[in-house]
Image (tube, rainbow, N blue to C red):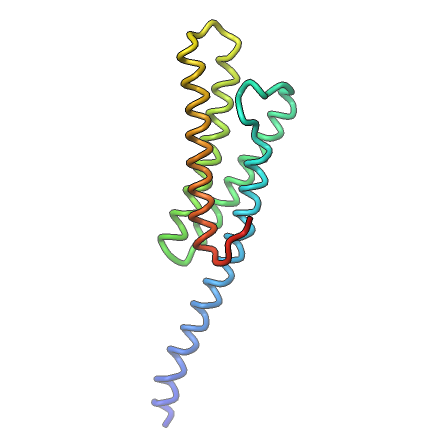
Length: 146
């Protein structure tokens, strides 16, 4: 009887722990999606919209804090899909911020119009990448959060 109880009980306890770990991670991921979307809304649409360098620097720090939080969520993911999804959001957020910063630094110089248009296209593409990454993590986290 004891062997039968252990044979049934141990897998049930292990399953419960896996489910609890998954649910805990899903909540962390949901919170990270909300933070990612909030941070995305702080980022300007275009490098031309960056007027206040102090505010821009503060936004850059917030981007990095949220990206680090996303990396931590990724590292605690119970599976490879969750790990990849959270890292993808962190990467996309950093790349959007970097592309905006690059555009800000070159906008004052003498650049051909094609370069400036290319920067705007790159910002748009990075924003699209972030949206896709956020949607993927949102889907993995359970109920979509918007």
